[in-house]
Each structure stands twice: as C-alpha cells, then as structure tokens.
Image 1 (cartoon, helix red, strand yellow):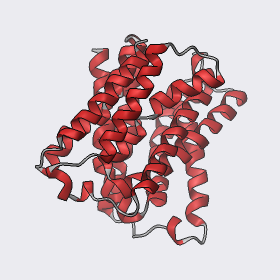
Image 2 (tube, rainbow, N blue to C red; image 1 turned 90 degrees about the vertical axis):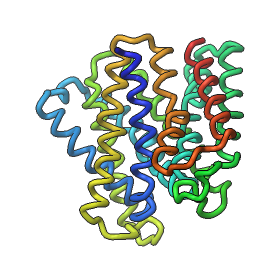
Image 3 (cartoon, rainbow, N blue to C red; image 1 turned 180 degrees about the horizontal axis):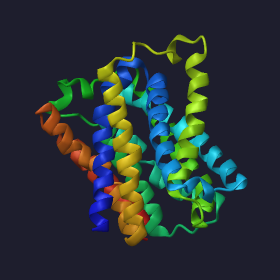
Length: 296
C-alpha cells in the first residue's frame, strides 16, 4: 500500500510536467509559478484552517520553513518553469530529478552525513543518465511541441540544474524542522508555498517584460494551472507523506523518484509516438542511480 502511494506520487509529478507545459509557455514561467502557487496556497490555507494544523508551528519553525520556501519553492519552481518552457517536460523533468543526488551531496557537505562508495556511484550514474536523457534523440515524439527546444539548450539545462539545486537546498533547510516531528506537514507546505507567492507577486509586478504575464488568464488556462498545482502539491505530496508514514524511507524515496521513467509512457500516450531508446536508457540509468543513493 505504502509503496503504491509512493509510485502514485511519482506518476502525479510526471503528469504535472505535461499538464503545465502548455500554460507555462502561454502565460510565461514567472506568471505560471505565481498563479499556480497562489491557487495552491488558497487550497492549503483552507485545509490548515479546518484541521488547526497552524497551531503546531512556532515562530522559529516558521522562519526556517519560510527560508526553505524561498529557496526550494520560489527559486526552485520558478527556474524549473523556465527550463520547462525551453526544453519541454521530458528533459526538464530529468534535470529536476537531479535534486536527489544534489540533496545527498549537500547533506554530506553541510550536515556531515556519510556517503559510502555505493552512494557516490549512484550520484555518478544519475548524472550520466540525465545527460543521456537530455542530450539524446527524442525519437518519434520529437516532432511534438512537448519535445521542441526553444532557445539555446545550455540555457535550459542551466535553469534545470539550478532548479534541482534549489529544491535540494530547500529540502535541506526544512529537514531539521520536519525531523522534529512536531510541525503539521500541510501547514509546513502552506508556509513554504505562501512565501513563494509573496516573492512571485513582486517578480511579476516588476517592469521587466520577461517576468510579466505573456497572456490573459482565461478559464481554460486557469483550470490547467490549478490541475497542475493539485496534482503536484496536493495529491502528489499527500501520497508521498502517506507513503513515508509507514513505508521504508529508502524504498519510498526511490519509487517516488521514478518520474523521469514514468513520464516516458505518459508522453507516448499523449503524443502517440514512442520515445527513443536513448530516452529510456537515460531514465533507467538515473533511476538506478537514485536507488543506489536511497538504498545505501
């Protein structure tokens, strides 16, 4: 049951990239992040108000969670959307999956957590697998808009790597607070996403064309953005928290990191074209690398 929940979380995150790709390109990555985070904040706020989870948070906890949201949600998500717009959901998702080995490396450097040879091998395999998945040929699905590369590849790759680093850093900052076991998970998510909304609102109000909304928010775009937020931040995160409540951390973490693999059959269904063998091989290598890290 717990393992299926972790797999369900990975599937949610895989589908999210496909659901959000179109709206992110339509309204712009900054506006997309602002709209999505704002919608999710309202949903989480309603849940927290009903459950009373806000009572579990101290001022000290809130400060660290806000910093975690600034780094992981605001910077991480915003940069991910920039990468998504430029590289498409498959490549951006593969790059973002590097947050797992990055978190392991940061844990080693910042928290002094040990990383045995098996862990280092996993980090290396993740890096190689993602490189193969991103730089390899897309296969028959290459003619679809989801596989179109807009602008220079290295710029999109840089955005994706920085997004993964932001996600890893945000997780690292929040880890001591959540490890104490006193803070309600939904309330913690509310604080992290809420601070991201504040920062995003400032960003979209700046007189910089690239940060401003590129299109009007129609009912259809709003529904797609809301669906993306519900899949990623409500259903996906809830499934992961449920899986962690009773499953083994290593197994749950590995299964929830299968998004780069699961996005390939979903992409196949959506586009009607089979991804290339290179894409499958790269995603498989990255997943094995994550398994080596989490199951060490």
